[in-house]
Structures are given as C-alpha cells and as structure tokens.
Image (cartoon, rainbow, N blue to C red):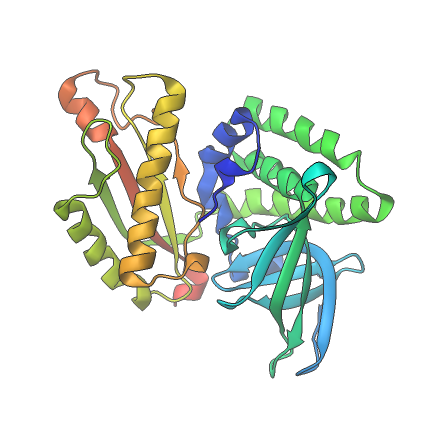
Length: 309
C-alpha cells in the first residue's frame, strides 16, 4: 500500500494536508453546486481516452470534467490500474492505489463504456507535478488562514509551469477546491459509526481489544450506502515531532490493513490514512492519564446525508 506521505511532498505540505481529511468527501449531492457542464456518455463497449480534472468522487465512481467542460462518470474496479508518469532519470510508470484519486487531480482515463454510458476505467494516469499540485491545493480547505495562504502560493508556483491547455484545466481544479470549501462548511455528512482505539507507548500493534472494536465497526460499514472510512492516527506529545508523526502514521496504517485484510473492505472505500503526530491533542492536561488518551486512532464511517436517505 502506498500513501501520500511517500510521494516526496515536503513535510510542510504533509502537515497541512492532515488538517482537513473530511474535505476528501465530495458527495454526489454537492455536484449541483459546481458550474454546470455538459453531460458526456460513452457508448457501451466502445474504447475511450479522456483527460480532465476529477470534479467529485463517491465510493467507486467519480466525475471527470474535460477541457471542453464535458462531464463523464468514471467507474473504478479492482482491476483498474492507477499510475503516475515520472520523468527524468527515474522515468516510467509508478503504481498507486485508488486513495490517490482526490478531487482536483488532473488525470487521463482509458477504458470502455458500459450500459449506463459510464466509462469503466482500465488505466488511469497522471503526472507527478499534477499529483503534487492537487495534494497542495487540497490543504486550502483547512480552516487556518496562514496555512491556506502558504499552500495557495505553492499551487500558484506549480501552475506557472503548466502549458496553456493545462492552465485551463487548473482553473477548473480551482473551481473544485472553492466549491469543496463551501460544501464542507454546510455540515452535509452523517456519522454512521465511530471508534477510538488506544495504543501502548511507542506501539502501533493492534491488540485483541482494538481488533474487537474494529470487528464491530466493520459490521456496520456495509449497511451504509456510499460509505467512506476515515482513519486518523495520533501520538502523545512526548518524544520528537517527526518520530511522533511516523508513529501515528504507522498506527493508522495498521488499522487500514486490518480492515482490508480481515474484513475485505475495498481500498476505494477508505480515505488516505493520516498520522497527525501530537498536533491535535484530545486534552489540554499534561498528565500520564491524559497522555494515554493521546495515543489513539480515530476511525469513522461517513456518508453524505443526501445519499443516505
């Protein structure tokens, strides 16, 4: 499994990205809040190749808007290949899992049409520059103005390097980001289930108690329509910052591995697991008892209110 923290993005961008993971939940009901595009369908069985920006994502589907503002529904399957095109000395194709497909990412999708006019993706590709731009841009939805300003500057610097056609797609990406901010402020999500798992000092290993909590949570997830699972790891403030960040990430990844291997929850249903280190304490107290509450992973099953009726 490959994660966002391994994509050579600076520690500053990683720390900013951790602030607003709920921004990844772009629901289909929020689609109408974007400037309207032209609905595009793909003939059943016909091969197609479309390049555009991911507008919204819900479970195993997403809406792709091309440079002519045509919107195509794209379907993800277990056999969909997702890769980045690297340049320079290490040029070639590097595989990624479905968690990388965030709204705002510019991609090229190849596949065939299905009976509903959707494009069933066989191969999805994107450049490393666009991946970094999308990851950086997403932190603009964080409620901290200073961090958002720094991230916006990084996005602007990246966009200057794009060709003219790429700039038009980048403008659409900014529209996605702005709309995402409005959607996230409307409290449009239902929390189906949540659990908090506590860990021993310097440990990312799941014990019997934590596994039992996840077993109970996994039994609830399939009953929710278009559900997504959010996993956030934390550490207590003792120790060095970067060590805590790494430890909290390991705890989050251990939870994801258990849910996918033990309960067959598809990766496309799990948001990118994030480790916050000790940046979001559960309490202001500085006691050994309070620190026990900091060594945790919070797991939530979320659905959009409009899709859960």
